[in-house]
Image (cartoon, rainbow, N blue to C red; front, side, top):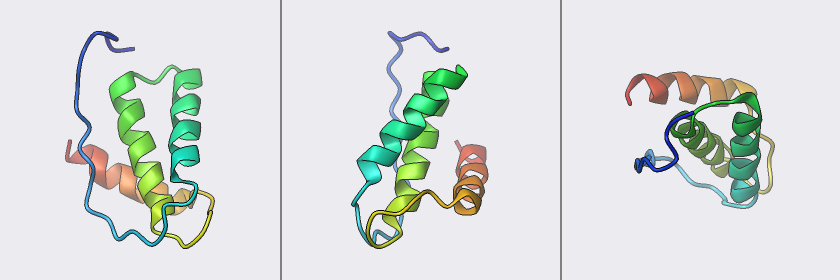
Amino acid sequence: MSNHNESVLTPASERNIADVSGAGDTVISVAALCLAAGVDYITLSKLANIAGGVVCAEVGVAPVDKKKFFEKAKEQMAHR
């Protein structure tokens, strides 16, 4: 894991937002999963942000679409 004293900003990506319902729960869930898996904090913040964005593109409370999440993660993680 990265040094917890290190400060890094994780920029948001431009997205079409349909609804923010459940986005916070999604971010927390992905962050917890990453922590349990031993993922570093910087990658954790990027993946949690991506997952939150994926659910914001759906109307109402929606599960993370695995295909969309992996596509966005591959796309955005390559550019950062």
